[in-house]
Length: 245
DNA sequence: GTTATTTGACCTTA
DNA sequence: TAAGGTCAAATAAC
Image (cartoon, rainbow, N blue to C red; front, side, top):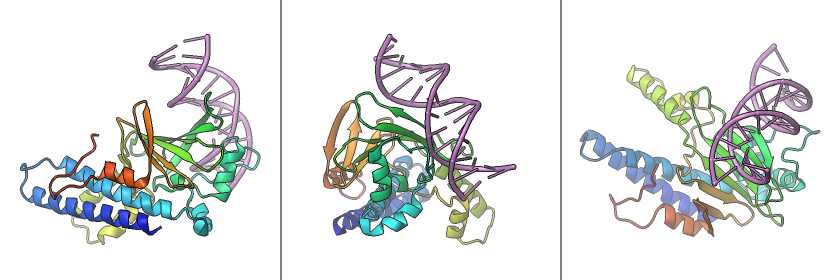
């Protein structure tokens, strides 16, 4: 999936560029708002990581994917989502959404009247520890193929808290390697800050690698190129598009 | 024993 | 009142 890798590289480059801008801004405090730059850096890396994650959904990587799936734990007696389709998906087609880098805890599932499959509800595993209010809903939306819609609601603040802790440690004179500290601070959660909501960001992952943005009640599907264009439109340096938070 | 998942009940909203 | 979202006790896995 070289196309996706190219996109990922682009995203990383954009993130790098934004990081450089942020560095410059921080050296000249007050000149430019820093928050949009933070968001762009996070979004860039998030998107790149999501692409890598989706590239790992190729059947050849199935075994490793299954290992990494955080919600794979299932009771043999109780069906995860009560539908054959989802079971089939989990076991026969790796679920990329479950490998989005965050740790999720399932807190419910519901049969949706207009849909043939149940909707599963997850919240951040650190919702209490780090007061992270991020949740997601996973819904299979097609019977004929393994297409799942994951709707992310809320913003992950768990990794932000971890970074604050990290920065405190560093500023307190710790000599430990920065990345060692990151690994310690957030073994599982240093990962994508997917497009966050007030508007919900919805990503569909399936056999066609479709991505979807859901804007209010008007849904539309787009391929990853369109999604990319939406997320990171062509722009000159210093003229980024930021998503409202 | 601890932690995660399941699932019916309850709450909220349109 | 119906439908979607969340809670929490029961249950299963480790």
